[in-house]
Length: 102
Image 1 (cartoon, helix red, strand yellow):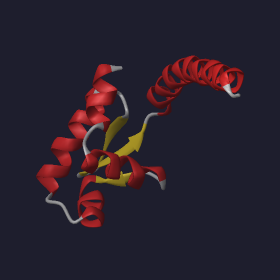
Image 2: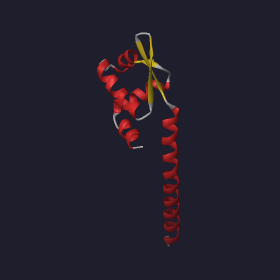
Image 3: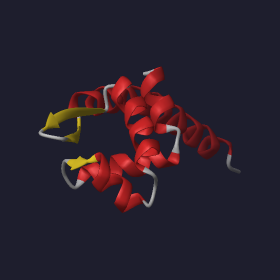
Image 4: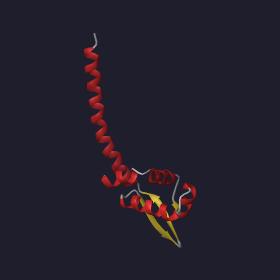
């Protein structure tokens, strides 16, 4: 999870993920859409790839990028686990505040 959070901590990488939600794209297409240099996009994609969020496949002279759903499913599971803890804490706080009202 550390690698996933590190990868998603950067705004450019989150924008790349958003772009890939619409479908697979090449590095050049992503660079053009974001207005960022191709080498920069490639470096950001490497971080996303190491975190398991993105994969790249070679097609002729292009590298097509795609989101990997399994990594996002693990992230969702992690968030869901902690969401239940927060919900329980907030419910207890609300009950206590309600009990302390005059």
